[in-house]
Image (cartoon, rainbow, N blue to C red; front, side):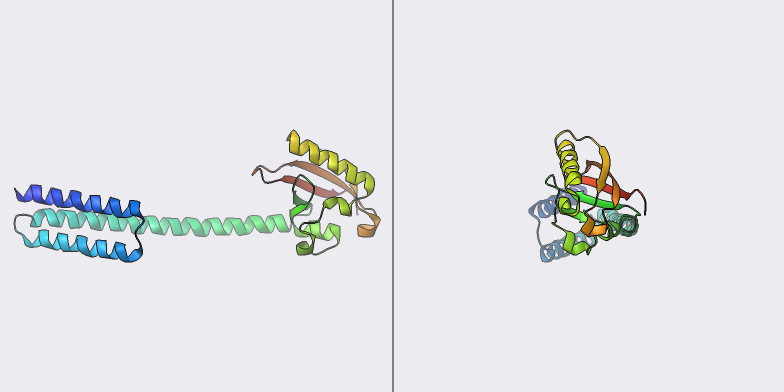
Length: 197
């Protein structure tokens, strides 16, 4: 058997072992042992005059792959940091929007709300989660909201109407409501905008 055939078999064997290790989901110690075993095979190839050139070529290929992995890791890290910054920015825009923003389930229970929405309802955001929004509306407005929620849940149409808060919340304040399905499919989005202060 020639040295070239030996190195190709060894390289194929290494690739096969690596593929097997990846598909079996081995732990970090197994990966370390596999890397040590691969370096042992590479060392064995490098010490034989018949396969030394192939070993150097394989070592160069491994180094190139390592540099590629390092560059990909750096790109992923930069991308992750960029996404975290953008998420933080979007959360600030959501929280400090000058309208009340809600995510509701089809029954009208509050799943999420921004700071302005909590201010409109006169409570802390954490304590309002799980409340039914109808509790904070006048009876007529609660009926209108129920009809809008039913239409948004069944037909998926956007709608808008006037709603009034209960007098106990904020002196019967009039609001403009816009409603539509959440694009994520997790509920219904509602925006409440004061019609005047």
